[in-house]
Amino acid sequence: MIAPRVTLEDVRAFEWPFRLRLPFRFGVITVTHGRQAVIAVRVRLQDGRVAEGMAAETLAAKWFDKDPTLTDAQNEHQLRRAIEIARDAYLAAGARTPFALFADNHAAILTAAAAERLPPLVAGFGPALLDRAILDAVLRAHGLSFAAGMRANIAGLAPHAAIADLDGFDWTGFLASLLPRQRIAARHTVGLVDPITAADQPPGTRVEDGLPETLEEVCAAYRHTYFKLKVGGDIAADVDRLCRIAAVLDRSAPGYRATLDGNEQYADAEGALALWHAIEAEPRLATLRHAVLFIEQPVKRAAALSIDIAPLAAHRPVIVDESDGTLDAFLAARACGYAGVSSKACKGVYKSLVNLARCRRWNAELGAERFFLSGEDLTTLAGLCVQQDLALVSLLGLVHVERNGHHFVDGFAGRPRAEAERFLAAHPGLYRATARGPRLAIADGMLDLASLDCAGFGAAVLPDTAAMETMPKAAWPVS
Image (cartoon, rainbow, N blue to C red; front, side):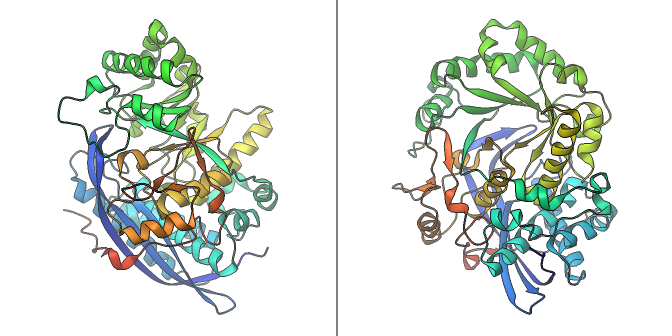
């Protein structure tokens, strides 16, 4: 189809607080609560029609910017400011295709953000939300699902100076060739403070809310076959914890596959390689070692794209995640020996598709399936947020995706019960009813994505903004 040109006319920003049912530690932070941002846009199509769309994403502290001198509140204000910068750029852009709105403004948004000391990963948060909300509006106006619309190139992906390495790429043929998945395996995250067995829970510390708490209970309840294991940078402690995890998985999840997430805990590749050698030397980790599919960015982002990761990659493929701040980051990562890159809706729909196109081209040139995307989580919460990310990984054709929001947050906690019930009614395969309200449904480790094939970006219904707070003006930059 011919991609419509749209004009962004209005952007409204909201947010709401949530609490985690279990603490979640990754890298340098242990999370107990958070806030989710919700963006509502109004666009005018070239035929004069007006359409509205929405997007949602967590304002995650200490991931987009891990500067220890910044408070969690300041991290949230950084992300609010990223939304403001993108909003102003898109409102001033005039009529363009959805992809052109993104690509034409990419460099200018990065420059404006850098002038306010916002790193690229933060800067990309604003466009990522706006692009999804704009796509949602356009898809609803045309009565198309995300998969159907993107396979027809409703966004207008085309060669562009922002992705000059893909000049001459056949975007129409590429998008039409994508085969969205109806089911996907949920890769369960084992955080650094998660209890492995009941022995890890001192008396009186259980939540007792009817959901699994220990890894043993998770295996019994959801029957996962894929797991994501966090490591913390202390080799002895990591090996000991991995041994305790392996004892459960070897017994309770036969045939499992796993990924290791270094969370930037190593200063260089040698440190991460030492961990791998320690894993190889531990007999109790023999099954787990063979189960590892890839290692997620173990080296701090300041050095990750300036070192040779090949010594570690010789043992398992390594993907880049936190250093994937710009559209060309995967190019630099490839030169360093990385084979993969994470897809996260918070980093942008178009970035995921561009990187998938690169994988297709590079693998074709190589004559082998070396380069790949992985689906990673950032506490995608029940409702619009998790559904948009699942619609994206479905289109990308990924076999499994990290999911953690359903485990660390109690269903639609923090949202009105009526809203949760509307999502359950509209997406009965994706959610299940419980006495405490609808929750994500995982059966035999799988998620049912069939209901995402609806008009709009992955959601047949939308959240209630009347039950949210208006997003405050960003208190950024700070002196």
